[in-house]
Amino acid sequence: MREEILSLKNQAIAQISAAKSAEDLEELRIAYLGRSGKLTELFKRIKSVPSEEKKLVGVLINEAKNALTSLLSERKNSLKESARDWFDPTIPGIKPPRGHLHLVTHAIDEIANTFAQIGFVRVRYPEVEWDWFAFGGLNMPKDHPARDEWETFFVEGLNHPKFGEMVLTPQTSSGQLREMQRVKTPPIRMINIAKCYRRQIDVSHFPMFHQFEGLVIDEGISIAHLKGTLDYFARNFFGKERKTRLRPFHFQFTEPSFEVDITCGICEGKGCKVCKGGWLELGGAGMVHPVVLKNGGIDPSKYTGFAFGWGVERTYMMKSGLSIPDIRLLYSSGLQFLRQF
Ligand code: DAH
Image (cartoon, protein in one colour):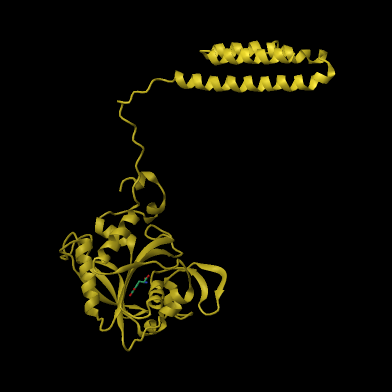
């Protein structure tokens, strides 16, 4: 019976290999493996095989069945392939959809490039930070009411013996102390652009937003350097005609402190409906407080410095003239909105 099995198998293989259509294949399947197919018939005859041969015959028939089954499905697939419509290489291809960078990524790149041209080095520091870097070391003691302005996220249960509680950075100013500790000996000229987190959400606030923080420390740094840097930024980022002004303000970590305004781009400082008086508010700045220098390990009797910290989203909207009615749209992942930019 052995020879019979092998020759049946070879015959089937030859026929299956030569089949030209799916229908032929199906016919062959029925002829060999169907309920009364040729191979199935052999199975039925195992009963009458002498018992010492039974096992071997069983194995051979099974092998034949497996070989034919897999050859049938292989052939079926390859017939499907070749039946496909023919390919016309002259038809123009379908372009895959092309993405682009997020509006805020563009803003960050532009801001970083503008400052890089006058020697500011972009740095990055932890977004999950100890209280001391975010507040305490910036001259804002634990119970100081000024802290209320920064509605901070605290990471529960984590406490540093020296640096206190763990927070999500509420402002990029934490990078000031980190940079002073890293560089140790001035000059320092950093631009820290990073995510900030505060417990606020409405049309103009989002719990995660971005700030950019400049810090310059060296011997003899004065308000004149601060003003010059801000004017440079105004001209190069917003346009040649733009100017800045410093308005007295208060921050714990700078003395004196200012709010920086920029001339309105629409009326060039004359006063119009948008700016109401010719000026638009950019953000905070000031001369680094001696206590902060000391906390950063820098001798305030030898070195002075200035700092500024503004919101990326706000600054970019002012530049582009985009008025986004709700800041939450920027981080909504809504493609219909994001595709516009
Ligand atoms: N960190 C302040 C805030 O988030 C902004 C700021 C003010 C940064 C004055 C500075 C500065 O570097 O000198 O509101």
